[in-house]
Image (cartoon, rainbow, N blue to C red; front, side, top):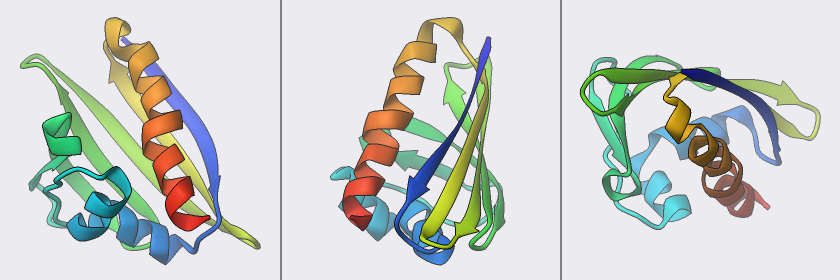
Length: 124
């Protein structure tokens, strides 16, 4: 199992980014795919039409999101997204733990291109 940690700079306020990450209508705009999301801890979520699925664990509005992403029946990966305000937008800190070795390269690339690449396009 491997861990991933990276910072991304987005030209938007923490509240706008939090909304884009938690509002299903906004998620569908930047992913282009159906999404199921609620800010209720313990609720299930689905993004990219089921490519990413898991359970929402914790929400601190405009500051932090913690989720458990499912990798098969025996493995869950914890994703923590922290929003740090900056003079010109927000620094987003992403940490993902317990990533299966065989999925690490795909997950790392997905954070860069699909997830934050799409968010960058939304806010630029």
